[in-house]
Amino acid sequence: MISGHTKIYAVLGHPIGHTLSPVMHNRAMKALQMDAVYLALDVPPDEVRTCLDAMRIMSFGGLNVTIPLKEKVIEVMDELAPSATLLGAVNTIEFRDGKLIGHNTDGVGFLKASQSAFGESIDGKTVFVLGAGGAGRAVALTAASAGASAVTVADIDEARASKTVEEIKSAAPTCNTSFVKAGSDEAKQACLASDWVVQASPLGMKPDDPAPMEAGWFRDGQCLFDLIYMYPETVTMKEAASAGARCSNGLGMLMEQGAEAFEVWTGRTAARHEMMCALQEAVYK
Ligand code: NAP
Image (tube, rainbow, N blue to C red):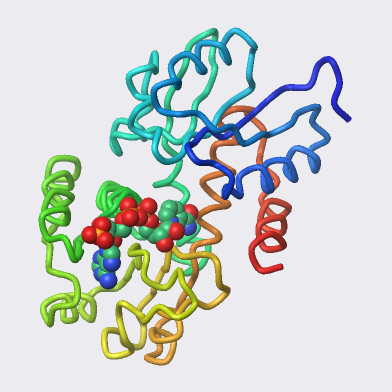
């Protein structure tokens, strides 16, 4: 029931109709019997400052921020948490004592979901990341900062992969890092040599997409984490599993980044099981 005390939470983006965040957060709020509601609001980049000022006055409980606002909102924040500083982007806004604090839970979402899927941490692992866009860059930087011994970044755009590698060198100087061109034999060898492989390219989102990495890129004992979450088993997971790798899709990462945001806003333990069930019902129907 909406009451005069209902606390408002929201995700801001442009466009925003596709978002799954309301599904999981409203389920979590219901599970914890909170007098709260989570909405999806379309905010054009030029209006984001005006909107955030208004939301501060209206005592919003907390916000998520998605494409194309993740970098844009930084200039409006009063403070940045270390997670947002590391990634140069904000996906979670906390209202604390009238101040806007920018956080980024994408990295910890990846770390928690992969640890939960594989039963081991990324610390000391060699990691191959395919795709250096927004998500791949966040994963590569987080993996290096969380103690991965080596991170190789591959992208069809070599300049983008190279830029991510320079950022890793600066943020995690002890991590052994390099870039390769996606699809090359060098990339295949680097993938085969790695303990963990992260698929962060968009290939596999459409049902008839080919796998960006075939079975010959994988081996027994490896772990593949595919960020794509719209299928229980993605096309890359099929290839990797046939070579003996353990595999996970990205739905757990989507849930964990949301759960971490929920905990930043409320200080309460998020209802992870309910959030995951809500996502599975919405995505796999
Ligand atoms: P993005 O910003 O568009 O980045 C994708 C990157 O991959 C781009 O640099 C792109 O290059 C490159 N690329 C395209 N085809 C490639 C290929 N065959 N091999 C290697 N690199 C290739 O997208 P994003 O936001 O990072 O998202 C990437 C994927 O992660 C999407 O499937 C998205 O749904 C998923 N994702 C999942 C979560 C989660 O919580 N599970 C969170 C965020 C994103 P070009 O730009 O030159 O094409």
